[in-house]
Image (cartoon, rainbow, N blue to C red; front, top):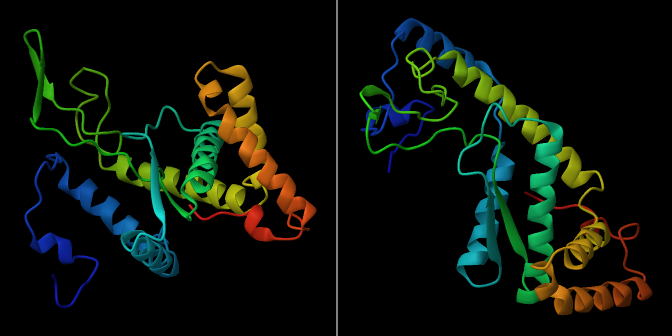
Length: 231
């Protein structure tokens, strides 16, 4: 544990599986620019997550982590972000009802661009090139130019992450996470998918629970906790 943490403290430790950046000047310019950008996650959000994870450790909550193995520059877009969030919300609703405890929703999203590699090189036939380390470093195309680490990708990854988080915050606090709407999505999944029919019983139970809550005067319009979530 570092006694006096600073943003550069990590540089004092050994870091494995690092790319070899061919242009040190460009790398420094990119990291200097990143140092001036606003944080993607704020201290209050980190403290809230720490508190929620403490509840998980004490058996009072459950973690749901979901998202891509590695995000892509190519698959970026509002619809893709919305659809990933939709699936996370659907899973969280079922888990909340089944487990009877709060679900701490953690998205593997908005910054998961790097890929670990056991080897620095990838060989196909007689051709050997640097390994693909994620779009934050180089490109997946198997040709010499695409596999050269490019520091400007660090900035692009930051910009895409910021855009993703802005949209997620808007959706999770702007009504998209309405529990009744999430339940409708689950009902559609049950009705239209052979896999979904396994969850028909629990979907019906959730439906009855929501009707009971509404009869008691608890609805998204009366309680923001039914239409807003933290991710």
